[in-house]
Length: 117
Image (cartoon, rainbow, N blue to C red; front, side, top):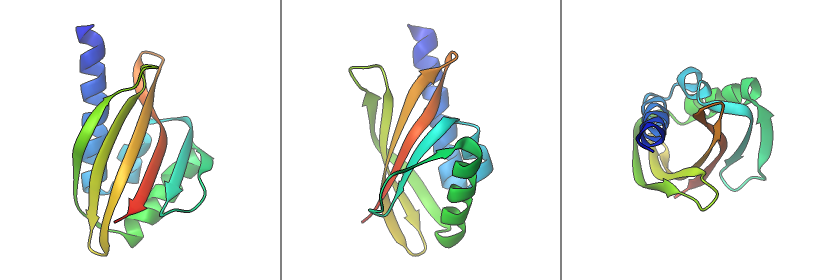
């Protein structure tokens, strides 16, 4: 159980660092093979990890990060990790919902939802 808790912490920790830095490259290391991204109320779109990196690169370019903090995180009944955070950029802030699934012994992002505050 402790190994799993460590994997969870590591996974969310590296996601948090990447978000704070606005690094799509670092963030993409945590992507599953397909990632569903929802930006600002638009319809959720599934992307390959490569496409998702590009989408996030554009997002970070338009919304340069000032800060990212996780307000709440936990594990769903199905064993998925989730985190609800606040992404602050120069142009405003977003509530971010990140969901991760276990895959090959580590947790990978399978969906990200950005809701402009």
